[in-house]
Amino acid sequence: MNKTCKILSLILILCLVSGFMGCLDNGGVTADPDVEINISYVEIREYDKNNYRAAHGHIFLYIQVHLRNLDDRSDLYPASRDFEVDTDLGYTHNYHDVIGFPNKIEPGGEDEFWISFEIREEDTGKILRYEPDWIQRDPFEEEIPSYR
Picture 1 (cartoon, rainbow, N blue to C red):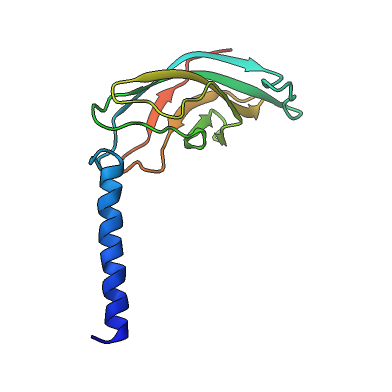
Picture 2 (picture 1 turned 180 degrees about the vertical axis):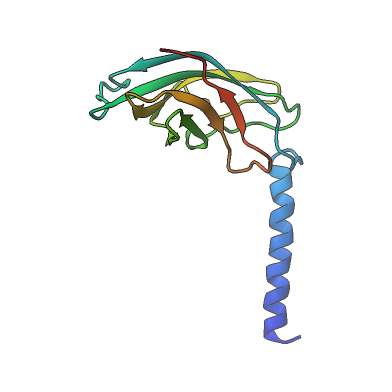
């Protein structure tokens, strides 16, 4: 066997082993966990939790989110960067800050936290979107209730 074949064989074995270990890492489940997302409360603020004032002509939109892991086998590892808000004026905003954000939600578990977005003062949040990196389906979306 020449050197190139040995290297390719070794790479193939490493890929197979790492793929197998990835399945073991999440309890042997590779499917997307099912998630339920609900909005408990919405408010607007001029300042964030660190007393940082929103940019001129902007406000902070604070959304209290209730996130539930409906999967009975896989832990859910939410990340704040996976949340976005779509507005009435057609903008999409990434999160600004979080309060009480969970690191992990166990199977069947749930948690509640606040997430904020800096949006234009004349704009209104319309849709909260949760789109994790691992998702292989449409993102989870929840309509933001009227708050003005």
